[in-house]
Image 1 (spheres, one colour):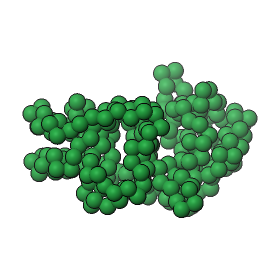
Image 2 (cartoon, rainbow, N blue to C red; image 1 turned 90 degrees about the horizontal axis):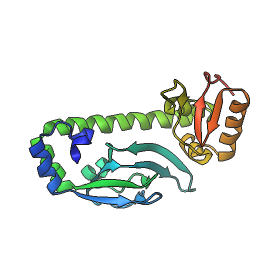
Image 3 (cartoon, one colour; image 1 turned 180 degrees about the vertical axis):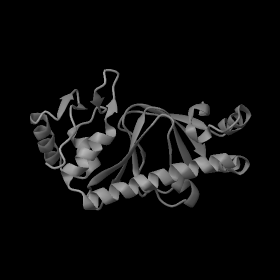
Length: 215
């Protein structure tokens, strides 16, 4: 089960079997809150076996910012696992998903005997810190259009027919990602459609030509 997770790719079959002894799985339905910002740590590492989750932060006014989307093979909960501080973000199931939950004691035993896992974990944490730094910088220094254009460019993937297409995204989800109102995001998307820069089909956004530098 764990052999498909990048974090444990260096483990032998025997080591994986030992680790799975302490692990248990749990299913979550779409929309379920897996972790709530500010909650005390439950000393569990979460490993995504199937499905997709999103990570959000909320300020005192209730405004949400989407920090990340994780999929099969990803993990989360590492920070609270080490410092046992309250959860720094809220995690919600985007669709039905299945997770493996690994208690801190079992994971730390594995780290002691397999230093390669510590290296992979460090790479994961550093990558997320860089992404967070980039997002904070973008929110502070780039206008709404610039943030939206970069988000669409980053999320669009090449399809078999050669087109560039994002996964399904609602206007509300995009507004959460870029830290703007849904109305503003809708206005920009409509202008881009009229200009022939994008097409939208079943919430998937196709980039038909390079987005303009300014809106």
